[in-house]
Length: 158
Image (cartoon, rainbow, N blue to C red):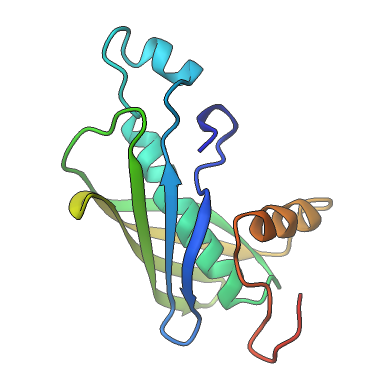
């Protein structure tokens, strides 16, 4: 994770396009400017960044599902629950499953676990739209960097 740059997902561990499921790892850094204010002397990952972590895993799932034909934009976070605190150095297992895709929207359910313990979960809704000018290439580069398989259903790299 690079919290201050909103790069939350470090590695895609597994992608199952047919089942609509992704598993990823996110390693909380030992130090980050975010921890200087949240909270001094007792560093914790803000809940909003945990929601962002679930949204990014879900977003990569939607990108893969759509073959990078459209960009998912987070529109809603529903039923979010934060069950425990997350501190520096934690390795987070992030999973998301695709619940709906159609009519320009995608819905996922996502979880974050640490050492097998459920830390957070939510339902996330995305609007899928054409990529804004100049965003397609950086998104593909980041997806490759974290190990997202880049072949579409037809075996062609997007």
